Every structure is written in structure tokens, then in C-alpha cells.
Amino acid sequence: MPDKILPDSRLIGALFIAGLSNKGHSTTTERVILANAIFLVVPFIIVISYLLDYQEFLKPISELNFDQFTRLMFAGASLICYFLNRSNLFLTSRWIYLLSWVAFWLLLDPIVQGTSSDYYFHFDLSIIGFSVVTQILISYKKEPIAFTSLMLFSLVSIFFQQPYLLHFDSDRSFTETFLDNNYTYLTSIYYWAIFNLIIGYLLYIYEKSNNRLVENNVQLDQLTMNLEGLVAERTSDLQKKQNALLEITNKLRESEEKYRKLFTNSFEGIALLKLNRPMETSLSKEEQIKYLSENLTLAECNHVFGQLYLHGDPDTLIGKPLSFIMDHKESLTNLLQAYIDNNHHLNGQVFKESIHETDRWFISHITSQIENDSISWIWLNKLDITEKSMQDNERKILLQNLEEYAFQTSHELRGPLSRLLGLTSLLLNKNVFDQEELPEMLKHINSTSIEIDEVIKMMNQVLSRSSYESKLTKKS
Image 1 (cartoon, one colour):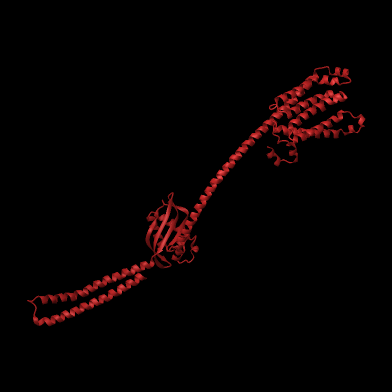
Image 2 (cartoon, one colour; image 1 turned 90 degrees about the horizontal axis):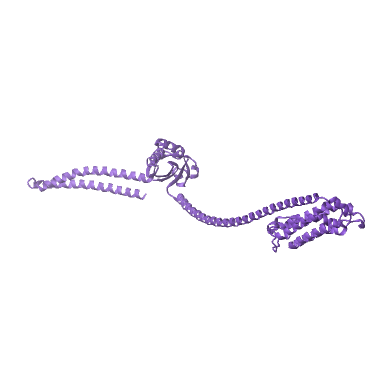
């Protein structure tokens, strides 16, 4: 307790808590503080009384009475007790103080100079003061024998104060007539009981309050220790959670870097579209198309997406509505309609779009998340396949031309082949064949063969040119 009081106390407080480090006796800390207060306050009051009554001391020394110096001597004894208390001699200091009280307030004045008339009026107050000081300096709980003995001494002194004072009274016969009644005893006992009850009750409350304060301090210390342990435990948990959070943050950062690289370096156009207010999927298809067309805005996109719509800097598109980017209304409607028809997803469907009056073909992927039957964001991926589509169309046209050419060539070959077949059948038929007609028939066979050969050469030229064009298309 001293360690807790001293740092927060100033000079006056330090005076009253002197001697608290003594552990050699069972006296409570409160008794030591109260003793210091008495040892210091009583001399101060005595000095004040001397200053107020200074005219009485302006007389010659021979005219001064002994009782005018007893208070000053008691003040000196009180200060000695205080310094003894500072030296951790509380047991010695309090007994010296009690004995000094008896000596200077009860014994010396009547014995040295006799009993004055005013002693009969304030002597009982000195006895009551002794009992009050006894209660302050000695605890009835820890030192019951000493406490009871001193209190009985004060009570007995109340009963025998008049015979004691009369013993030293030079005018005893007159005083006895004046004091010959029981009223004076009852009054003294009454005041003795009242003062001691009040002081005892106040000390009881004071010690109880201090005990409660000590208990509260003990509980507070325990709570502080528990709190420190809890804080240390929580700090350790927070440190672990912080380390885990840092690890997760690092992983998220790595994942974000990978995502950024994929997002930036992708050869597909990628865009994140958001809705200021989520769209309910319970709306009709027409209402959903209208709502998406009017409210979808671009939140993020890569360079490829910006280049698809002829914008070099994709940041200029951020915050723009999708209807502004895909300004061809029919293309946007077809895309959204397919997205809604496929349960709000789209996976690799080819769409034709008109961008600044130029037809382009895209493979589109749309991903969205439905929460509580509402959609708040959409990922749109687009792959430009315009050149591939044009090549495919060229191949289709080429194949179609080849089919038409093959059909035409087959007709051109059918005539010469039919004639050739007719001539050969005549040669094989001996009944019909005439040897004189052989040269003419051979001439017809030769001309027909030449005609077939011409058709075949022309076909080879066409097929060679088509094969070369097909190879060029594949390479491009």
C-alpha cells in the first residue's frame, strides 16, 4: 500500500503516511495514519492557542504558572512521538503519547501547582480526550487487553476525578460544598459515553471502508492480473490471426497479380459490367432486356476489349453504359436475348455485330452470379473471329464453285464419253462392223479422246488453282 500511495501524494500526504513500512506489529495501516495525524495536528493546535493567548505570557516569569507550560511540553512530546513513528517505532510512540497525555493533562498540573477552580470544569474533558486517543491509537480487535485496560482506566478516572482534584485543592472545604452532588458525575459519564460511542462508530466505519477499499484493491489487482493474462492471450491470438491474415493477404495479392496478368495479357476482350441496382430474374424477358440495356455499365475492362470497339484507352470506357459501347441496338438485343434464354449464362456462342457500320463476328461468353434471385454483375468475354469467319465464307464459296464446276464438267465429259462408248461397242460388234469404215471410226475415236483430254486438262488447271488458293487462305 505505501508504494501505491507515495507516488501520488504530495508533501502533506507524505507527512501522514510516515512509518507505514513497519511490518513488526499487528497494527493496521489506518492506525498509523491516524496516529501521525494526531501527532502533528495537536502541536499545531497548541501553538495556535498560544498565539491567541500570547498576552498571558508577557508577564514576568515569576508570575507565570506551571500549567502555562505543560501544553507546550506536551506538544514537544507529541512531535517526538511523530519522529519515533517515522522510524517505524509505532508501538513505542503511541505508549509514550498516552503516558505523556496522562502526565501533562492529568497529573503534573494538580501535583505541581495544586488544583485551580477551573480544573473542575475541564478535567473530565482531558479524561475523555484520553479515551478518544486510546480508541484512535489502539485497535480493540487486535489488542483487546490493552484497549480494555486503558478504557477502564479512563472510566475509573471519571469516577475518581473529584477526590483526586480535592486532594490537591488548597480551598478544599469550599469546593466540597460546591461539588456535593451526583449531577457532576452523571454529566461526565454521559459525555464520556457519547464521545467514545461517536468516535468508536466513526473508527468502525473508517476501518470498514478501508478494509473494503483494500479488498477492492486486491480484487482490482487480481482483475488486473487476469486482464493482463487475457490481454496477453488475446494479443497472442491476434498475432496468430494477423499472421494468418498476412498469409492470406499475400496469397490474395499473388492471386490478384496472376489475375491481372491473365486479365491484361489475354487475347480475348474481358469486361466487368455492373448494375447500380440488382435485377430480379423474375421479370419477363422483355423487361430484363430493357433493364439490362439501360442499366448495365462498364466497371472494368482490358485493352483488348477497348480495341474491339475501336478505343485505344480502355479507361475512357469505364462508367459508360453498355448501350453506349455496343451502339448497334439489334446486336445488343440479340446478345442479351441469348444470355437470358440460356438461364443467364452464355458459353461460346457466335454473334454478328455491327461496329461503326462494319460487320464483325465474335464468340461471346457471359458469366453472372444469381443471389436471392437477383443479378448485380456480369463478366463478358469476347473473341474476335471476323477473319476466320471471312475465310470460312471464302472456303464455302470456293467449294460451291467447285461443285458447280464439277457438275458442268461432268456434262462436258458425258458427250465425248458417250460417243467413245458407242464407237467401241461398234468395233466389238463383228456383225455390224465393216472393215472399210475402220479408218473413219479410228479418226472419230481420236478426236473424241482429244476432246476428253482437253476437258481433263482444264479440270486439272481449275483444281490446281483452287488448291493453291486454299493453301494461301490457311496460311493467312
